[in-house]
Image (cartoon, rainbow, N blue to C red):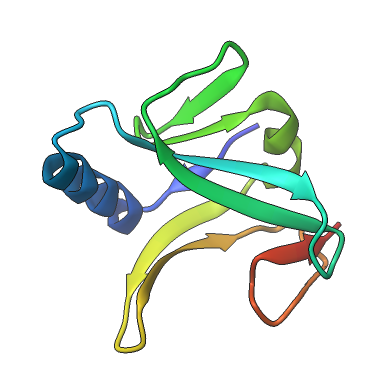
Length: 105
């Protein structure tokens, strides 16, 4: 199982590391039950690694259970006029909600 981390996401995480002075900072992505479509993404910046974490591109971590829902996902970072955000292109999601934070499989 794998997650692809686009160069734009790696670059943004490197910028955040430098700005916060935390060389080990990574983006943790987990999948939780809930949201309007059944599952929701949770993203947070952290330096904490857990026993069952998987690391991708030395920038993104997820747990072994969430990885089952995220397998094949491409993570990128988009900087636009309205705002900037990490984007997840998840091939396992068969539908989602308008906010982009919730999906179903």
